[in-house]
Length: 499
Ligand code: NAP
Ligand code: MG
Image: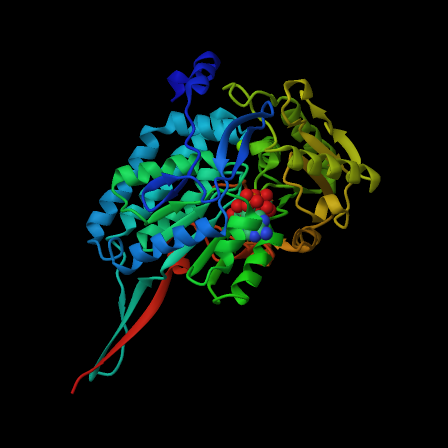
């Protein structure tokens, strides 16, 4: 897409873009049964992009029935693995083929820089689907080491109808992390995108159908959490919910399950990632750059954002100076501009939440060292400056609560044990990073940090081969890698006794 990355051409492409805005049920776009719609807003200027179908319980019933039929008649799960693989590979290819359109949709809908949507979100979504497609005909089942008079097969079977309820920060990519393994395992699905960012997933449903995913196998229900999301969570015929979002809503899904059919739930929730920089960090410039990008990338709307910078006292001033220099150099503005580093916050509610935390940080006695203001409000959009707080103590709300915005809290420590103690002093345990030259410190701390991912001398690397997910109230279950298949499969033991 790089050749096409000029602001003028992107703007003109954006103007002629058409928006799919209906639910996708049983292979067709349909309105919500009630005819209700909601405004889909571009956070870069506050303008309405489209009126999107607002699905409620009735639509959920229709989609679940379609997914159930498609599961029971075996049109997908009983298809030869090599054929399912070919279809999913084609789906991935079509995402890539329509990458510019999808990146534009993501940027207009969510406010993230087009550079990131086109270099990360869309290609990573395609790569994820492709990775699981390739696994379809390569994963074998097991035979147990029983006595010689029996044969015990341990096989994985799809769990059934899977509902994926996903957030707005990486709209298509978070959905792809569920769709890849769930469809590869032979399930049928209903995806509920976040109400703020439904456009790419609605469009992707059509690409899946074009690739050959049979009717009813992948349904998409745009709508609100309290209505469509809750109806999926409470549905008696949904077998599994794969959720990504806040810890608060994650807990709702456990309750919905307990109060309905005990459906399986996996939760990828929030984080308050400690990014720990020791005095002997191998390259302070690299650590500072990673710390800044770790919190300012995607406007800080990242579950594993490095929102707590833990720095050894001896290097604090030097490191903070360097982090702020990177922050100051970042261009905040029009997400469609390919030179923009930080775009718009997803909506006015999230903007208010972030500004509220900046206020709280000041009141709690932290020192505001950089940023702290809403800017470019004349655009009608929701922009916040890269913001750095110094002199934060870990018990302040800005160190404990997930802000989900470009706000960094800096905390000092004296030695590695104290760093680990502060790092772990959080309800979350999604990720942690550590910068040190000392292999002993690195190993000891990596073991002691209670987090699903620990990054040494880097921040937020990732690969489809590596699982991702949290400890503690960051949830349970893992996305990515073959481990994700566990969420979407039942383990069957078939015991054959020889006479
Ligand atoms: P959210 O408010 O928890 O929403 C997530 C999804 O749940 C949305 O589709 C939402 O629908 C739906 N929902 C909201 N209320 C619901 C309810 N009462 N019943 C059923 N469903 C409901 O999270 P968000 O604000 O979209 O996203 C930010 C959060 O996601 C952060 O906490 C972030 O850390 C987390 N996240 C985690 C990961 C990870 O992999 N661990 C990745 C990305 C984001 P509506 O929005 O349409 O109402
Ligand atoms: Mg939007």
